[in-house]
Image (cartoon, rainbow, N blue to C red; front, side, top):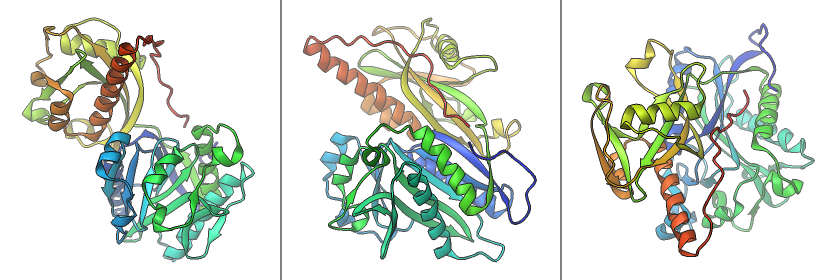
Length: 393
């Protein structure tokens, strides 16, 4: 576990560890931007974000788009997005099973050496994989760390007023087939690998989070202290098998479309909150089904700032619930002024937030998979796992 808090001096600065869940790349960019601003203002100490992204290919500043090998149709069928970003480096892939680290660190106090900073990031990763008996090293003229001719971790950073952002991506149990969609980092004749592949066994990403935090504390000489989320939420995707229900928030409440959401109250479990919110927002009783999706994101809301100091970071567990076509809805009119049943394609056009998109896509994918299985006469019944574990702080 990361070291416990203790008195620290200028030689041993505080760094807050934020163990996040799945974070869409766009939400990750927004969160980093806000944390960089707060760190530049010295409102917060150094930060270390550890998280996973949904499948996405990112192209850094000055990268060559020709290193994207797959056409748009292939990316769509694989559910892999493409995004041009502000970090350094060329092209890379992020996805579940890959541990992404975003240090928000001020390089002040006479240590404004960017090359040294990158070298330290590499050292953190080298020490981390060594825990699994893997020998990795730097390669002349190549960023990241390498196990032989195979890349196991990528590095791409950005510095703004001497505060860092972006960072590293360490392959733990990543879908390595997705790297075939690109020329990783623009380098020909090299491969990619992962901790699980080289260790020859399953490796829990939560375990690697702990080791990375420990090695980061050692290399950067920081007191790494876990910081809990600001609030815990649920999201419930209500559908009728073909269409999805989304609600419109009143103008004074944000003026946007969204699925059913709600805060987990003290003493509640996520499943209980999902059932309560379903009843309050639709008038229907029932137990929504967890869909194996927990996301983290930043909330910018003046309604919450009086209760939580910025940045306000939420962890949200997603559920789904099916109503018969034509079901009436009894909406809570305090927060929402209207609702609608929309096709999934229409709903994607109306929603604002990428985390809502991830939940909608997860439900749509499950429905399509069930339809295919049923057409083949297969049993689509699944046990209902009503609680999704949060990573340990």
